[in-house]
Image (tube, rainbow, N blue to C red; front, side, top):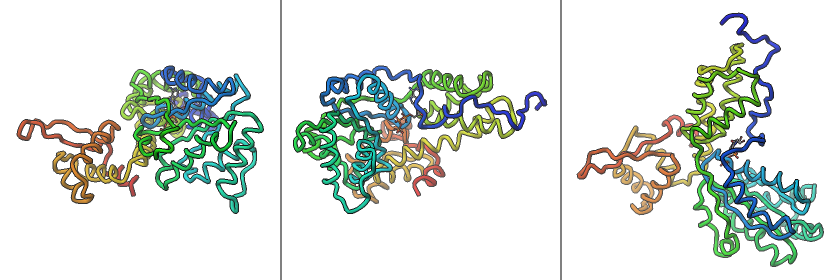
Length: 371
Ligand SMILES: Nc1ncnc2c1ncn2[C@@H]1O[C@H](COP(=O)(O)OP(=O)(O)OP(=O)(O)O)[C@@H](O)[C@H]1O
């Protein structure tokens, strides 16, 4: 490298490094207009002090579900002071007590006592406060599937969505966020009869959309002409494999840091390649953490062999679980559509219709993350 291409020790390639933080809410949020409009429509009653419709935002990791709801919250706050909004990350707050404490803290400004008070007492104070303030509460339950693992989903949803029956005048609605929309079939009847959400799909981003979003982040976050065209294209290609923009944002940051590490004034393809494994593991760990135990077993069995026929896979699966072919078939379809495994026809078998199953992730990646 020529000396003029080298970064001085006090120089940086990053014009604004916040732009590459995963919780950064970008001004430019394209390719999600239809989804944003549906959420706006659902929350509109709140502008007149009414209870909004509930929403279910679903789609693969990193497709903008959380960001979309936070963008709408920001908009709401500009129009009205009648609405209070809270986002709960259910992966962190995964019990009904933790969820309600998070909401309580946001509404009351102080945390409830950590012990010695029941859920009902806290909920009672919260609901009465909302009525006193005459405010509508919209709660985002992000990654709501985590509430199912310890059996807290029904109680949380029941308390929030039927609050008005016990506390007339209270107005609470829920935006549930999840990768797999089937989650709503897991609610019991008392909840599903009142949840009835607007279902809003967030599909995987396509190459051109990813390229557009990354180009905007590059313009805002790096000094001009730092990221080479080749590096940008490679990032967009890598991100297209999963459609997860979280990988893209992380890749930008890591590639920039790699370039700085070698004191280069340019981020090039080598920097991107080096960053890719770590960035991709964000996507893999998020995807795997959302699988059920049976799905995890399948992914292990598939990753163990380079490829396996659907018939052989079923036999192994059945030997360990005793589950029948119908359930196996349902799980496989779900995993194929979630882009966790692929299934191609082999041209072999009696009618050339044997399906060959392959894992999208490498065995080491699965082993490391499913330990
Ligand atoms: N349309 C978009 N424009 C700009 N940035 C986006 C867009 N969609 C997603 N992002 C960025 O991608 C990252 C992931 O987005 P977000 O967390 O909203 O996805 P998600 O669908 O909620 O993911 P998960 O299901 O894994 O929680 C964020 O850093 C966000 O800023």
